[in-house]
Image (cartoon, rainbow, N blue to C red):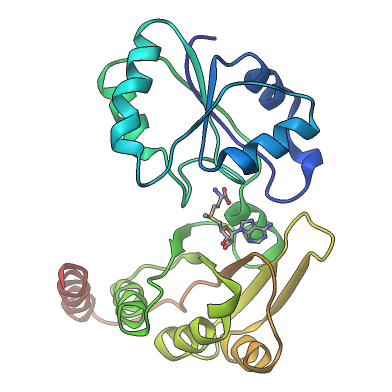
Length: 251
Ligand code: SAM
């Protein structure tokens, strides 16, 4: 149908492209994608030939007015990312906001997402969960991000946390998480989901940090961390911690 359709694509296993995703991409006037080579190769393997238009962090502001013009004219535009669900740690949010602001038709074809797949395989409580995406790559800002999560937990947040991480940073991030959230927190490292070398390793943050301190991590990785044990205290204590958490959030 006319409008902007957010289409989820596989996170590794080509078979996970749904029939509806395929039909939507086939019928699109244009497919917006992060990398035309990645999406072009994926579509070629399904025998789909369609106009690909790059949309990434660096051109989203420039592309948005052009896409909106196409949509106003009744065009069928699909948005995909390299893998998984668009917008989730991927481009598209600004375009979606702009389309909503103009009342243009917006649809989604749901499908693969690494965060939810990791969550379901982790053996950790499935809800409430907090999807964080990537922590900052540098040690200082990363520790500050973890401290903000911890402050929120001290103020009462009790949720399973889901993070994405690059393989070359996994060991240091697990060590920082063990230090910032507590070494005994139950966790899971989900690697190469839906692919040939899929692996889910479960243990405490300390166990996982120790394992990956020596084992080389390869491929794509999601980290799942079980909720903090419930914080006890008087109402005054919890309120003081909430103020602390708010202050940490503003720094
Ligand atoms: N939009 C995607 C989604 O819906 O999951 C996520 C895009 S984000 C740029 C890419 C990150 O997602 C990877 O660095 C990794 O942390 C995680 N990821 C993607 N595919 C994965 C897989 N097959 N197994 C584990 N993690 C994966």
